[in-house]
Amino acid sequence: MDDELRKRGTSMVAEAASRMSSDLSVAGLPASLKATRQGAVGTLWLARSEKRNALDDRTILGIESYFTSIADDIKVVVLAAEGADFSAGLDLGEIKERGIGEGIEHSRLWHRAFERIQFGKVPVVAVMQGAVIGGGLELAAAAHVRVAERSAYYALPEASRGIFVGGGGSVRLPRLIGVARVMDMILTGRTYAAEEGQTIGLSTYLVDGGEGFATGLELAQRIASNVPLTNFAAIHMLPRIAEGDPASGFATEALIAAIAQADDEAKARLNDFLEKRGPKVKRV
Amino acid sequence: MDDELRKRGTSMVAEAASRMSSDLSVAGLPASLKATRQGAVGTLWLARSEKRNALDDRTILGIESYFTSIADDIKVVVLAAEGADFSAGLDLGEIKERGIGEGIEHSRLWHRAFERIQFGKVPVVAVMQGAVIGGGLELAAAAHVRVAERSAYYALPEASRGIFVGGGGSVRLPRLIGVARVMDMILTGRTYAAEEGQTIGLSTYLVDGGEGFATGLELAQRIASNVPLTNFAAIHMLPRIAEGDPASGFATEALIAAIAQADDEAKARLNDFLEKRGPKVKRV
Image 1 (cartoon, rainbow over the protein chains, first blue to last red):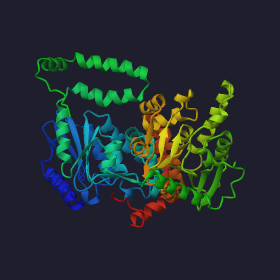
Image 2 (image 1 turned 120 degrees about the vertical axis):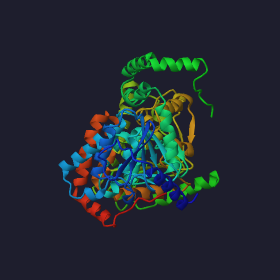
Image 3 (image 1 turned 135 degrees about the horizontal axis):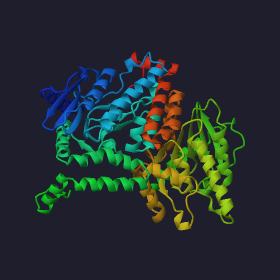
Image 4 (image 1 turned 180 degrees about the vertical axis):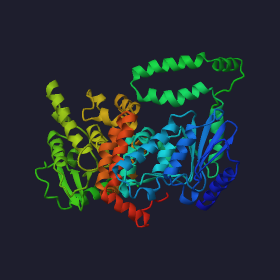
């Protein structure tokens, strides 16, 4: 599929999706964001495609607000973007006049907002197409599962602009692709294509143009069907166990494993499985 | 290209480059090392190809000395090797009569020298061809960006010789390719080819035979054009942030991001970018 077709495919889906009726229970979002929902899956759309979904302060505050006030019956969120690009990153127009103190506050705003994604109430599936650059890549890195369309490309052009990552990229990206690859991206400003990104770990799903949102939604629905306690363990306990020392990790794992299996819902599902009613792992 | 041609290509470039005029400001290097420079990019050549650039004590001391006394107007260093091989590793001839105390001192000498590469004044780009073995791989792992020619191959044959990595490999290599792969390399003595090395992360650039030095030089020139503060952040702050606990990492990232964006040079480049004069991220 050539570039034009791919772009058109991508925007067709994004536009169709963006015509879905807004989730009216979500109040106070800026114009650069839009919320929709399908059953237990909410979607937060970056909706500033005329600026390649560049992330200004209002958008970041809107992201924080959305993830802080997710309705109880939303079990998973898809983070998607209208238009041809996921996000071209930090809106550089806002940085011009900023001093050191304001720069720290700004970085801390991003950290706070993205922390609500990574360690919030529900798993988050990011769907990426086109530019996933700088702050856009930092945003995607805060999600729990990443789907890339073949049009996606990744870069950290901060160094050539004289700045440094400030949205958690230096913390989260080395955990995805290793510190050496992140250092190379920053020093040389290189761009990774979607296929390479999939190989090194920037995405774990790679799909054709226009299929990203449908794939993200399907994965989200599957995640929503899990026992909530298991989803909690996966997004809150697993990364802490993986970060910490192994001895504490084993102890914590014993606790969370025991708590999970003692849950009534878990018992019911184990019974289903033993009586051949549950889902099986499919051979690939 | 067949092996012979590839080897010849490699040595042609290395020989041409080694005929470049020496950087006379660099004093006191042993015969096994050679320094050249092109503008703001210095190159340190391993120049003992008749011994496959095996690393003896004099060479290690020379590497330490070179990286300790880099001229202020050198902004990036390329670490390259004459001949068909990057380095066959530790010069085993020297190890024969060493007791435990001397063995510790020897390992600490390597650590000290390679620390000057990894946490020195400037980013370092290693260009690897042919054998990148044992201590040679440990040396390359201390650089910030690694370019491999297709002739490169990697191994840690220490175990079969009854010894263990002593040049920082047990610290740096697991951070590049994961501890399981390093353990496998040590236990089984397996060899990774250049393509595999690229996939698992031993290199982040893979080029044809004879193109390694030109690629390394081009990357180095690109890195040299970054704002120095961003390069400092990439080589000194990023790895510390990536190693530490995430909470400290976010705080440190906020500081360095704010300091970088408040820099005059950064402001000038942001202005260029906003007025469409700056470099753009190229879609791949």
